[in-house]
Image (tube, rainbow, N blue to C red):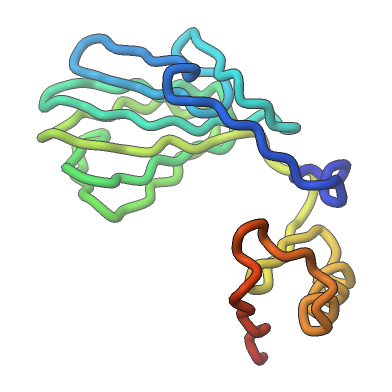
Length: 166
């Protein structure tokens, strides 16, 4: 989250699959989950300029990944793809340089997740399930978790996972 939204109350809004933009053309089926791409914009709101999409590609289909966002990557869920003559397969995360135009060629049936966005407003620190721009806030969260001051997840108040040691 941007620093301005790190301490806001959590919120959930459901968007059914039928509400998300779908782009179907040239052997590609793209579901735009968040952000804007391929001439469409998702109804999912996020306080930072970001992209998240699923693309299912038929063999021989080409998926362009324009440099609309400085940070872009794909995770290959299944299948094989070719990018600039190099072959990549399932389980690989490919991070692209800002400004590069990328063409993803499906060698066989492939499913990729597209992620991207603009660089965040500063460094983030990660410890277990806690992420913050402040190390002190992470230390505070650790203490709140240990002492049971975190709210329980609705419908899941029976199990407590202890804070990892270390």
